[in-house]
Length: 392
Ligand code: RFL
Ligand code: PHB
Image 1 (cartoon, rainbow, N blue to C red):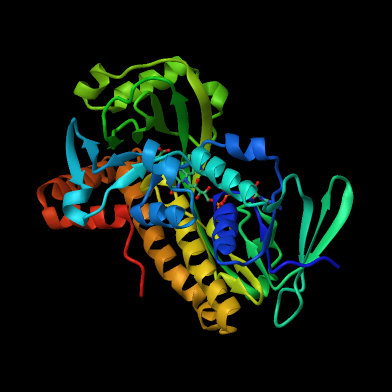
Image 2: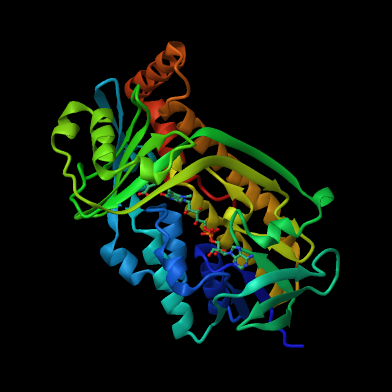
């Protein structure tokens, strides 16, 4: 039977980044992706990278376009009660964020992998994981071009997202799953209009949360909190712009440029952590192991942080035979995951309309006013937003 060192299930950002970094260390991998390359690259998702994610992408050899086209953001604004408070990320936490779309990262990684002659199987159907528990011999089977296929390997990296097959293959007795689904969603649109402000604006409003983000100085990405049961058809562009304008402070509402949406979608908000993240010879990575609500812009960055820890552990194993870092993977990754899960939950609860209860809204305003007055409180936000330091 054919074999490779690492089978990577999932060709999203986690899977391709892991495969590319392993390649840089001389470790062979095969990526099995359920969808076509075109489909994967069309998914509009994250837009904001932490400095440590940028450094890892550079290490992977895909930093050129990112550093050229990405927009450096030194801060963002919190809007509430008709006013704004700027969180000075650079001044308070010493780091900036980079605006660069996940679609672009996906494209850069796929280009780099293909240029290096990588084995990526697109449209791999019915992927199944075998023999990864204990000291077994892991195998992965799938159907490609209508034919059954199989590969033996040393390790399996489950990079196949929240709905993937990897986590679902772990027997229930071996895994603990923590989950909260929030009672609202985000309706997001992309439009070729200049962003309303040079920096991101997170708005708490009695009508609900709104976020002004961007992909470039001519392409805006905006979100409004919506009901979980809402459908995209309920939100023609005019209704979206009207609602966004109503939730922004007057000076921003007055200068909002509107135009036809080029993408529109609704995402539910969820906090989810699976523990542990290693099961014998299977490692869960990124959204396969954890989901955060997008409020803190942490999902893709956490996925990259997992990849950072795992590729170093695999590198140590193949260089020296030592499994020390492989054994530490789950604990090290989860330490960061829980802190980001806490921050994303906190920021979500601070900024969204939680109920019709006036007390809940007043408590949010009191906390936002405190943040605006207190440098240490603003610093706590800034430190978490730019990404916490890695444990040694
Ligand atoms: P992905 O991106 O879900 O990729 C998993 C891949 O696995 C494939 N797959 C399978 N392949 C083979 N066999 C199977 N059985 C398979 N099942 C699934 C899928 O087709 C897919 O290609 O997970 P990954 O790589 O871990 O990456 C995670 C990120 O995509 C995610 O965390 C972020 O997009 C979250 N996120 C944000 N993160 C940030 O860091 N900053 C942001 O600003 C940010 N904004 C966002 C976001 C997510 C959003 N949505 C839509 C959930 C904004 C939104 C609206
Ligand atoms: C985005 O640009 O898509 C974005 C930015 C910040 C977030 C979430 C999403 O917190």
